[in-house]
Length: 339
Image (cartoon, rainbow, N blue to C red; front, top):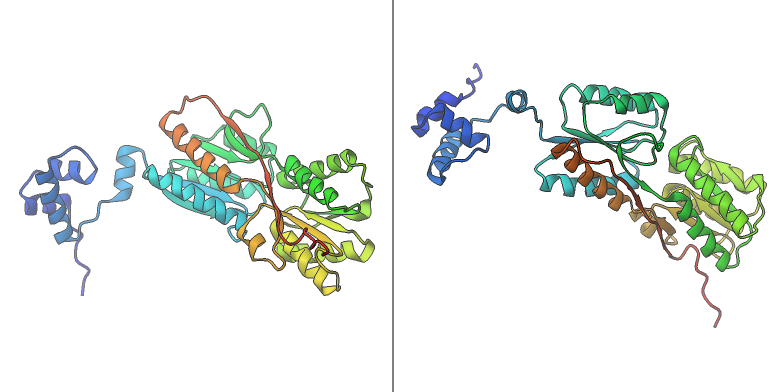
């Protein structure tokens, strides 16, 4: 049996007893009386008419879609970001489209090229690596872009970033106050934006608190993932005995908890552990994980607001925002006080 023909504007107009122009105005959100609006919507519903989104995009130049590109949609910090962005863009009558681009800047360049062909009205990009080619692609884009992360000062794009270095300093200060002296860093790749910032914060804190800068206390995982973290922490414990570990994110910190448990080390009695990002994973871990809150939801919401603003006013001044960190203290660093 052949599929029925899709109802046209003319059929909706005939059923409602109004002009095609009136139907088009109502269905595209134009001004119309309540009576006219009701007639058109009832006729459209009866006929199963659905407005052609692609045709409307060609006519208006809008898709009513905003894209969010992150490295790994499975990472809890990006889940927090997606929720925050969705809350903002939905209020502005946009749909959110999410892409998981990995850590290769070329994949983000390819995505930007695709979006520039009219698939979105704007892009929020959270890149792990910033390269000259990616910067060139963003500068030449016709699509409004807001970056979550650090950008060179001469790149005139709206961006919102965390203060990772200060965040690591908060973690180190807390551990020093707990009496820890051999504090290790489990980092992700240092050629990434977060990896380089975490390392800078760690080295600055070592100098600030006069702690040993020992190469064996600094390990780099191949990625910011649990699996990569297990391997990196196993290597760390095979060559050193730290009394505390600062991990570059919560997934790496949970990997540290698991690896320490496998070796019989007690947390926090033998080794204290601090993560970063303060995701739901931190509270769900056993023991619950002390973590640096880098304001992922706040950064994402701020980026979404900047993008909505940029779409509405392309000539608006560029804004650069920094979200300050805080420390959420939990069981992984707090020893029970002796009675």
